[in-house]
Image 1 (cartoon, rainbow, N blue to C red):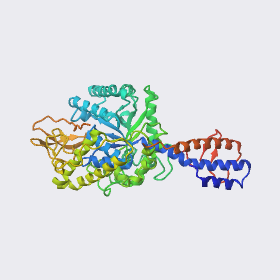
Image 2: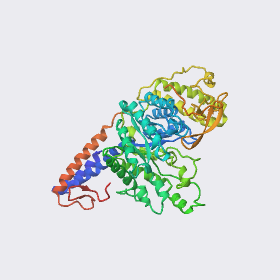
Image 3: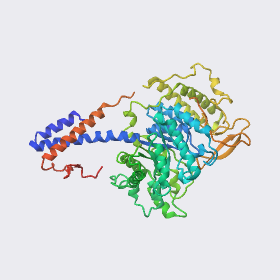
Length: 567
């Protein structure tokens, strides 16, 4: 952005200079003026591709998590299921915040073949996932099939064939809708690429190419450092010379992604796109590093803080474009306080949540250059069916505040916030809205007593559902004649499900029926920057020396160098 004062200063200083010296000095000042515009123009595109894993901990409140994601400004959300409730809450809060939203749902092995991936294939759940994608195609952009299948035994033998068949089935179903269909693989599964892995991944990539989808790998330099803190250079794992230091030219992420590109070329797919499905850095370590393995714990505690975690994510943003990545999903949104403090990160294992890292949402990377501020499409909006769900939810929240004292405060907080934001959204949003289906004059008593028999108006948990799988934002008791059973869910967690006595357990989800203008100033800034750069190159080639004190150097190959590192 070129202000009048900047040009005035250029003219005043230039009057004291002569000939080529004056011309070169002007170009240098113009180039310096271009730098902020170039940085901002790049940042919002990279930040849009920096997503977050929406893993719901045992004590997580989906509504609270969705609201927080919108506050942070995240565009891309990666679910670990295809829950209509999660999608609805994300849609609602992103619409209220007037933000762009892209969701990837999932059909992990424990849902496709419950309860642990080795049971009978649940085609009901699979078809529900497909229907959810189609019903929410304005904000749902694809699906992840299975999660880290190789380390759980789903890449070889009949289990491997079943996985590949399901990946192919979803690819065939969604290839004409522009959807992404992929699978998050652990890095040990892909690297090294040898033996049985070569024909297996050749088959995987051929299926991915039906939808033009990237192959997805999970990378954790933080955990690698925790595993071998005496052997792995900390800055190499972090990606910069300490918190606040300049980026390294070569980091562990660079090495891993370069290797992945090389492996894809080796098996016959040199142009295969790649993305990172999970990567994170703990922002806290609870308690002193005592007991067994205390020396390692002390080193882990030293680097598990805001400075290192925040720097790691900033470094990831800087590498998105340079490494040609389709995206990176941070793990995760929420801290997991009840997670075991397991090797190698111990207490740090609980604190990967960026919601805890960025208690002040304005410090989150997405606020460097808000992607939603540059978008004209892709915003979440509330549809007629969503407003119907909203009205039911309002009634349930009101009922909870009056009948469940242990959850009343949190329900009241959500009720008040949602009521205020819904009114503001209907009044002032630039996007198309449908008015609420509940008349303003409807008796309050009708909202206080939802019917137990109605799936849309819950006061108890329905058969086959987790006690938190409801509209109330809190655990609800099992409906009449159901029993509460503790079962494994989300791979390793324990959840309470309401089941018929002696009923065979199966995991299912609650089914719910379900403009901003592009800122031309950034375009102009980028064009101006390009003109400045071209002019600068021409003048430098004609000149013999640079003005004193300005760290710009023209290399023998004609490349402009800054003297402060490659970036």
